Length: 181
Image (cartoon, one colour):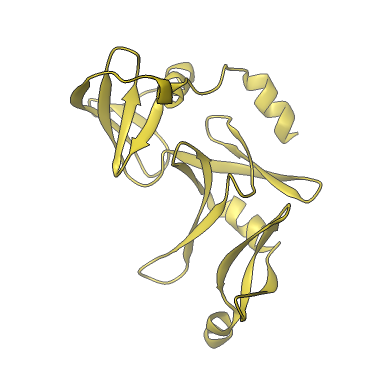
């Protein structure tokens, strides 16, 4: 079902922005909010095809998110992550995620998971999509992911984490989790 939804969405995929070297034209009033909604001049962009077009030319340069075309490069604001992982499935032993813009991401060494500690406790989960762009897992997807967690030794420490294919992504030391229980 996950793969069928992505195929139905169609699209050509991301543009080859790494081959372009346009002039930097500064920042524009475009923002991706924490919920993955794109805004221009304070108003949400309600055309999914337009959002997919912008996402196809999105990249990251150091701490700055930019839209790159052959003619220009402009900076935008991203509140958390530019994408949301809204669905998860398994292809054999590989986890596959679908983003809110219908990108399909196979989790592994090139598209890894990371878990960022939150100030109030807990972890914020992300999956790498492309070009240093990440998708934050929605709460429902994160709960499904946690159900797959397993314990493994990592550098002599018992870690709880997620396996996908040949890769293992540690979440937290088991000792920390036992202390919370």
